[in-house]
Amino acid sequence: MVNGVTRNRVLAQSATPTPLSSVPTKTQPDPSTAPAQDPPSTSSSGKSTEQAPDPIRTPDPRKVTTPPTNSESSTPPTEKTETQPVQTQSPKPQSAPAKAAPKSTPQPSPTAQPTKTKPVAQPTPTPNTPKPAQTTQPAKPKTTAKPVKEQQQAIVHLRQGVEKYGKGDFKGAVQDYNKAIQLNENYALAYVNRGYAHTVLGNNQAAIADYTKVIQLNPAKIDLTKIYLNRGLAFAAAQNYRAALNDYNQVLQRDAKNPEAYLNRGRAHAAMGNHIAAIQDYGQVIKLEPKSTLAYFNRGVAHTNIGDNATALADYSTALQLDPKYAAALYNRGLVHLNQGNSQEAIADFTASIQMDAKYAAAYKNRGTAHLKAGDPESAIKDFTQAITFNAEDVLAYYNRGIAHSAAGQNDAAIADYTQVLTLDPKFAAAYTNRGNLYAAQGDQEAALQDYSQAITANPENATAYNNRALVHSGLRQWEEALADYQQAAQIYQGQGASQDYERLQPLINELKTRVERQTDKP
Image (cartoon, rainbow, N blue to C red; front, side, top):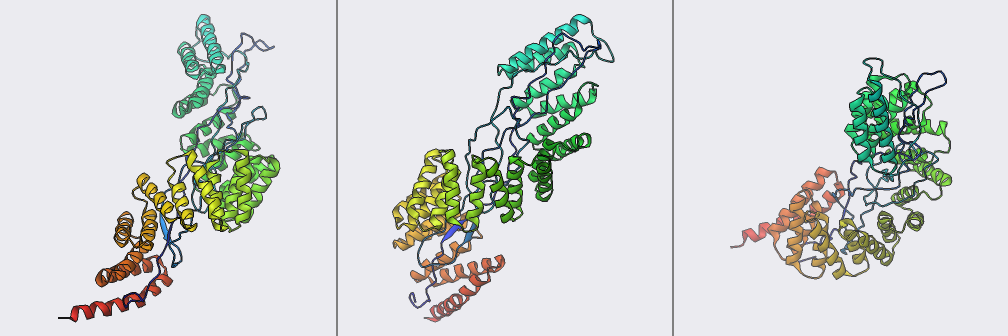
């Protein structure tokens, strides 16, 4: 009893981040797919031939990026002010584009941000500088023929563009391709190469326009299957997934056994939230290429998104059998273990991914969460601190470290961490709630009331903050304020379907109603 009112228990609060939709990354060319170049030669038949570069392939995805937003949910009430950690994870899964060709061996460089339940990985390719490839002289336009001198000048500019491209001067390459096209407006190969350079520069709309021009020209000697695939990748990089799907479908109509088209179509389906369709496409890749690490990895992401953790674990494990150094697969498998409550297995996977990349911030944060769940707050503090060294403005790392400090009984350090969270994000309601709990435990009721009020301002549906503020009001014998807060908390709980919390508050509300009535009846 507190001053005649049954004591309610202080509720700790943990943020429950909502995963963000992932943003597709820019596609980058593989070294094995270089811009086409025109040597001054013809085929044995005397007719000139034309060959487009291979489809742009993106390297293996190894990064998980973009922090989640914060929402809140209460944890079971306790007498202490300890809180539950924010379980970290990547943004909503987006499958990776087609695997890099054997000539390219991208190195893993994973980094990530936390969230709560579903693991995901977002591809972030590593740029490569391709070497120029040789092709034969383009066929003369079927319509208005250009003078021989202009044709030769166009070829010279195309070669110069290829040379600059090979040296990494992509803007210079575009300028030379521009000149080639000015000399020959129907020079399909120049449009192909310019589209390729635009893709490297991240000029997706310009690349799309160039590939579209090639399709309109429909040159007999250029395989449009490759052009549709390249344009599909550019559409995907521009987040126009529906258009990308249409292009991948065009590829598959021409080549029903094209694993890159299936893999990239699966990526587009996943980006649109069609995870079942994505799983089917990744399955097709696996039929065509049974050792495709990317297909298993991306299918694992899709299975996770539909809640099939067991199959996701199997896919991540298969990806790791094929590539034991696949840090992103270890990271995602660790997230599944963490979500299933297998803390030790999660710690093992996060540790292995950190051993592959000592700056894998997300792995440190998730391992910290796993340590907390395993009852080791000291190790958790070390991991969250390490994550903060990589990013001094990592809100969730500070928030989770505050939870770990609190669990270790280091309340002043926890308050300092929550204060830093609120400096970086003044609307982080859960940080106000948890800091208010610590102030209340230290006997600073006014500071606690202020924090609970700030939490409610940040999130008017924050039932936990109303509950805890009511408890402080009761301790200060402010019966009417306590009653109003409990009633508001009960209403929110009822609206959220939290029937146990709603029922828990009813005796307190009735008791406070009686006390308020007695107080009102006094002369």
